Length: 144
Length: 144
DNA sequence: TTAATTTCGGATATTTTTGTCCACTATTAT
DNA sequence: ATAATAGTGGACAAAAATATCCGAAATTAA
Ligand code: FES
Ligand code: FES
Image (cartoon, rainbow over all chains, first blue to last red; front, side, top):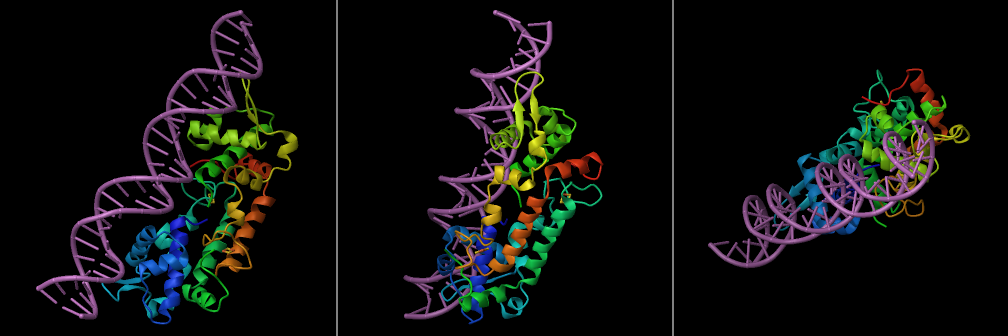
């Protein structure tokens, strides 16, 4: 569904959010460890999230990654996904036609669009913060 | 959502079905042309569909690909997708955990599973034949 | 100021996916 | 039989995704 990079990105964002609600910055090593992802690759993905202003980074000792409170309180999954995978998953044709459009649709268009839109709405209405809280309460996990 | 190979595979199956309802076999070249896909690559994908008994192939002059009537009348998209991409898309965790299970779920599990199941039901309840008929009626297209 | 730490960015490597090529086999028609 | 045709299977090539490495830049503490 999502690329590996995107999966790592979402998990990382959730973990960083977990720490940010407690005003704690967190280093690359810890992120990679907690979400069980390759460290160097995770670094690249975090850079993308930084560029897209999803997470904040600070260099030097005491540095690390965090999510600003103002951002955290309305950061949905869609923003994270788009930052890494782009919006093809919401806009692209299910059968791979150059572009999805209702004028000259693939034969699966109507029903596929329904599912695709459901996915988009799910990601729009799910916040990173709310998922972070699930982790806190032990109702969800980021590895295994 | 689906791999490129799977997109080609679905389009090919639909086109072959179109011809099979008129009892016409169809060659690789024509398939690739009509679904706008690379010929050699499409050949590999068709081989997979043959191995998985989705389509039938015959060698020699007058040979080509077809779908048996008995198969055609209850061939759904799920079979085509699984033949090429496997079932990870129906079973895999949205956040990339080793396995999706409700006992130790990722924080997105419940809502993700809902969408994932919707997709599976869509593919199970959509037949290749019904999509082929859309093409016939000019209500759907396989390229552009 | 210096040393230590941590992210950044570019180069490189590996793996997977996508795509091509071609000799071979099976089949048909002459 | 022979030649032509069409799918098969294996080797190979290119591109994209995934992953690693390392020096540079920024920041902090001593
Ligand atoms: S045209 Fe294929 S999903 Fe819209
Ligand atoms: S555990 Fe992630 S979707 Fe089920």
